[in-house]
View 1 (cartoon, rainbow, N blue to C red):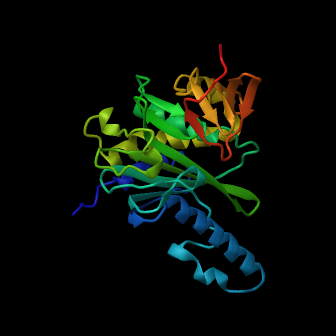
View 2 (view 1 turned 90 degrees about the vertical axis):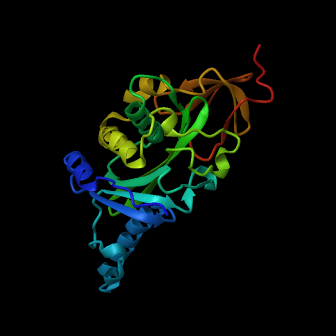
Length: 288
């Protein structure tokens, strides 16, 4: 039976709370999806607020004992996640002790969300692989180690009064006991212990969480442009033949909004995040 892990939540909170005032940290032994849990909390709080304006008592039924209008940041960790989600409805399975799955919710005053997943990816890659380039980023939201998929990022935003809450979900394979998600079957499988021997999920979180929080705090003012060069240093796709939806060509990096650039036989094309699936290799690039 898998033993409960020591996440050092108090020490982590003491380090992160000054960077993100009002932060709470929760550890669940099991959850369907940390992103879905936090998104639902925000929506329920928003619904309760609306009901309260009408004089009802819907606020008494809010989940998890959270205070009405409580939109403070929350770091939610699940030791075992049963129905994790990726882009385009893909699943992301996790195994207790062998995976790191968490979500961070926080209010963000952002006018342009473009490139946020790339910024999150850069922050995580630099924290876990500060001296090398073995950790690379596959646009728009995947982390790869030595040309195999290590993990993914899922960002959702939810209305919260006059603002929006961002929910940033991260899933990483830590050891080779991690289950391989369906979306990884054609991308290979990598785990963080190949890069950092014997690292545990709590140790991985302690390494990357401060960098992630600082990156999110800087994003409203800096946008993606300030991170573009750092992303390009770890860009897995650049110079590679790729297929993005119906487009085929050679990946040419990203622009200041974090949009993917592709050189095709018909000229350079721009692809924004959305629901476009990007694959390495293409049937015919049309390049000379």
